[in-house]
Image (cartoon, rainbow, N blue to C red; front, side, top):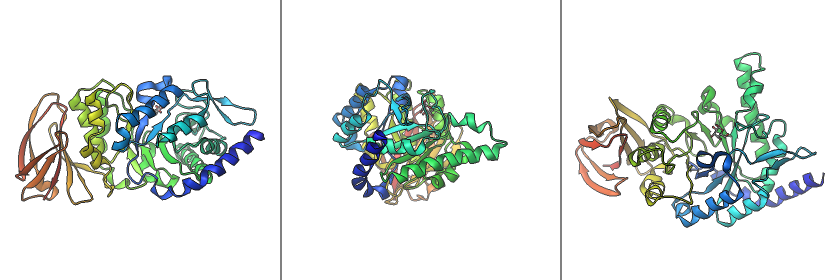
Amino acid sequence: MITKFRIAALALLVAPTAFAQTTTLAATPPMGWNSWNHFAGKVDDAGVRAAADAMVSSGMKDAGYMYINIDDTWEAGRDAQGNILTNSKFPDMKALADYVHSKGLKIGIYSSPGAQTCARFEGSLDHEVQDANTYAAWGIDYLKYDLCGLRTKMKTAPDAAAASKMMVDAYKKMDAALKATGRPILYSLCQYGDDAVWRWGTSVGGNMWRTTGDINDHYSRMAEIGFSQAGLAKFAGPGHWNDPDMLEVGNGGMKVDEYRTHMALWAILAAPLLAGNDLTKMTPETLAMLTNRDVIAVDQDKAGMQGDRVSTEGPIEFWSRTLADGSNAVGIFNRQDKPLSASVDFGKIGFSGGVKARDLWLGKDLGTLPSAYTAVIPGHGVLFLKVSK
Ligand code: GLA
């Protein structure tokens, strides 16, 4: 009882400042860091503090990164009243949240609508309200809610429609619980794109939803995910984004040109930019990619219009995103592993009389290009341009 009362009182204390921000939650695709891709089960309090420190000292915060997100494996069981407990890696979640906030950053956490999370830790099933209140009391700003364990329960449903309803209801239930706390908590759905979540993600309160299974640090998987996003643009916009999963930039499994493809494609897709590397050990090259202002400006463009594929010619893919100022971000991607000369027709995106272009990875204005332009694209690389009349 005492614990419950304390948590409710804390929730009241944090509510007033939080209210003011409600309407701006995820106005542009969320930017931050998540522990999973690099640390997986090794994430702990010290590592999260170090990530927060590094986000500030590296300049990532100044570039727009904001959320420090703890993924799976922080959970222990529950106390006698059913309150979720943290395991020994996280001795005091409220103190950790205070620390992250003291850096001018926000903090995220992870759970599942099932009895267990993907890594078989404690999930939120039948404790949704209690968990949402605990998160609010700790000062949590972001929840990634990962289907995993609920799939066991969904198997008991009489048919696919009933299973799907079970899932949708579970996401709605947590949304209501989060909203009832009065604290703005960004709601990130993770159910791997099942049942075309982009069609109903906003109706369950989602600010973003995973559109695919898990990414890994290999070009083949990153490209499979990224290039499969064609056609989803109309489902994204301010407050609700398609999420092709977190970044692998800097984790070491891809070449620089491949990571540039990763960042450029995610920017065209208006995808959340959640760095997934060890922020305390970044090469200057990794940091430069993650903080490239031109690239981030595309991702964060305030019109919030996701880009799409314009055309494909063999291994060359032409993608474009319309930006608020009437210009376009254009990616000419080479999916083959050796350099290839590609011809670009800017007329296809309405620029028939030539374009003014800036190379976003080189950070260089290219002057005026003819509407039919030929360039050599590195293997697995991209020519990433901002073009205007
Ligand atoms: C799933 C998610 C991942 C990560 C793990 C944690 O696989 O898709 O992003 O959260 O669970 O167990």
